[in-house]
Image 1: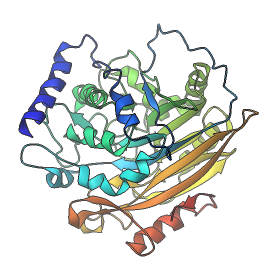
Image 2: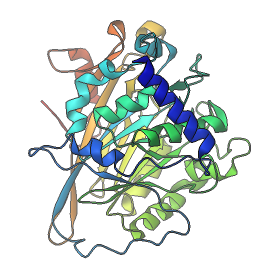
Image 3: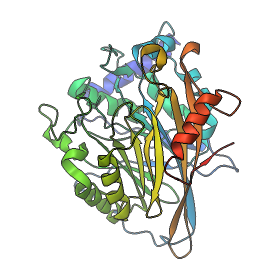
Length: 402
């Protein structure tokens, strides 16, 4: 165990020092594909393969000659993965960290989706130094291995804790994710590739953008201020880009071959179940533009309702997925609630794409190792009913899975 972990750390540190690009090397070409194929069965949709974002000199792919062929995919998304120090203590094994037990209950749901997307609200450390202290988040690299093993294909990394470990943290986060075959949509450590989406090759090709109200922990202040020395990161600030800039990025992604554009937005008011005017205004503009097909919202740490606008879904906030927040530490009731939201996209022979949304309520069991468990009418019923009520508050047609 120790030898394998030392080898992994050595490999990651090698990537930090040996690569010619500050953002680190791409994972081996077969890493994501091998992991994906092992999760595919005759009853499950084929997993997406990971496409690296194109460089500025890359040639845009030609449109597929079968662009209007019938096709369908599912995208599963979760809320904030926010490992407080108490979460990491529960994950400590003595010679490293193990998060598998915390995610075990939701693995079947994530693994059966074509694409799994997480909201990573922490930096990742390549050598497990400078780890999380209070509200400054930097998590062990083993978290990425668990995320990939559970079935995630990539993560949104734009949030108000992006800069918690500084520029080094931004660089190492991408390197650790790449080493485990995970895409990153969010800020880059250099101007090269800034604002480029993560891309997933599937029966319907997907581009994923990630933006936040802030990349520094200036709570609840919408700002266009970039971290010191990193002006290119304005590409991931929705206060700087506003709806027009995001729509332009989405249109470029579709011109480059994407059939669908997903946008992760870190927005809203912390611990507030109400959708803000800013969320409604931006969400409405993005979905009515026709350039954006799905919005995944996070940051409030509570479930907020979904809505369907122009035939497309906005999940205003999918709550917490993994954290130590809860009434026992002064957070409001509902801070332990989350969902695995799954959107099914189907394209017919005329090229029209329709959507349907299902979800599974989750709850963080803080008292038993911070395990994320499924909330049902008979298991954690209070959490289940809170989540169902919140999701349907605005008349969203999402269906809860049995």
